Length: 277
Ligand SMILES: C[S@@+](CC[C@H](N)C(=O)[O-])C[C@H]1O[C@@H](n2cnc3c(N)ncnc32)[C@H](O)[C@@H]1O
View 1 (spheres, rainbow, N blue to C red):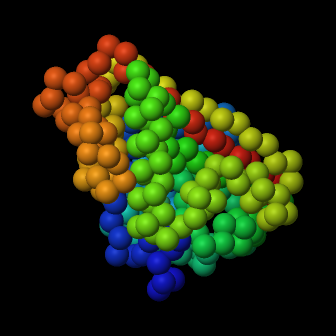
View 2: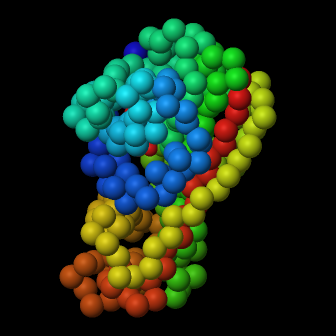
């Protein structure tokens, strides 16, 4: 297992499983649609590289049926444990570095890799390494949700722009990554072409919500975004007036709480780039 942290700080000891659970519960309808669009055949052998808490393992398993084989790999002890707990009994979950996956080469029909290739220092080398596990004409699907949602404060584009810039600055300071490193979805086509995959295609799905929100939507936006991604972390990057305004909008107890506004409208893209060996 790699000893040095990944580009975005992943190690075996890192645990952001709660955030991953929240995202997968929130985006389940769209993620199932994306998986269905891959048209997996019953009996297919599929790897989820960087499976996180493993919700996708069940959805992949539903597609390939009882004759298929589903394997999930994740570096983090806590994520692999959560995946083992949530995956169907027929799925195999391994705690391992996906760059050294203990799987036979040329053995897989599909590799699903969601919000993970951008965590590697060298995504092209990662894609090449993963592709070596595919049988001839097997496919790899790199999926990426936009780092910053495309719209969340529909009524205030100015504050939204300032918050986006503050989030970028926070990530640059926290992880020492550049603007280019954070623009992951922009590079997926290039990554697969540089990794010598064929018939590269791209499709972008939209995750869109309006108020009133369901419980999974509210939990993800409030906990994973407002509290755990933004919150006091953004204070150094905003004026005090803007920070106070943001705090009111993100506070479920405040009358101005964004998610209860009748004009709340959330848009986030989810891009899938598929290449063939
Ligand atoms: C943003 S999370 C995405 C998890 C999951 N695919 C999802 O979308 O919910 C990135 C995941 O990749 C894992 N990861 C990062 N580098 C890895 C590596 N070299 N090998 C295996 N897993 C890795 C992390 O532990 C984490 O679970």
